[in-house]
Length: 367
Ligand code: XIL
Image (cartoon, rainbow, N blue to C red):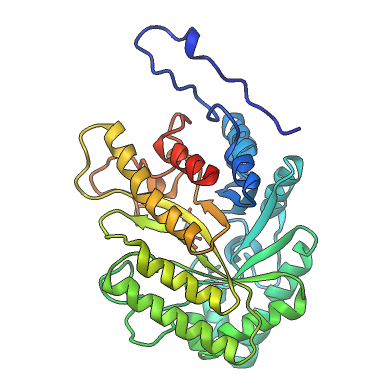
């Protein structure tokens, strides 16, 4: 039996208090609602928060079927010094998942961020050394996680970002400039995927990307770039099983289902699975006057994206954090709001009360 939180405090609340209790929403958890439709719902987690915060860990245990480590699977954690691997934080996530009968997906075997200080200079030691470094990392990590993680983001954010969108890349090529591209040339994506397939032949290999969802010229260009790169990989018989759509939504960007569904359909037509790996919502510069109205707008925008994802064949949906309190949209200056307002971009608020987005997720998983 899954843990059921004790709810139903509404009748005991003093007058004037909101009737929404702190903790998981009443009724079935999102994990069970999704599972009943053969869908999977999950979230990014940080091991130290799960360990130190019982309210959060209860919420995550009840709501999420699938966990992804927010930083524990990145290079700077896993290989802080050259040749020295550190699996402690990742094992903490795996232990939590095991205790709650949850699955874990891995993130990320190759990324141009979260690189330990030694890595970029080491990659410049020549192509043979760079290849060796990549191979040692992937083989060692997959050797560790073979029994516990069956889906990894092998490459993360390798497509170059056109002008107009977030963090535009100074290139018109399909791949972003990065230490990996400089060291190994454009074949590095294929190399990483082949190494991963060889190291763990039944692992699901996922290609994860941001900035490909909105109805804007830059997202359209990025979709085309991604399709070109992925088609090229498959044409060369490169192993690849899935494309992860991060889904860091930005409400200032228009969304329309049709081009996004078409994109997902094209990927599925190539035999790939598509999944939503990191959904959260950034609100527009001008906010509605009440929290209730802001939450309704967030739910509406994200709901349209989620419904289109489902229509396009996604069966796995992860949010990048369950609560506004534990969000990188609060703590990371690169993505936090400039006006100092706290984010409302997650299913639960900073007091761990469910919001309209949580209700919308439940609705989409129940329909
Ligand atoms: C973010 C984490 O949430 C932050 O805490 C960290 O400071 C930076 O990385 N795309 C990704 C994730 O693939 O790994 C990023 O996670 C968010 C954007």
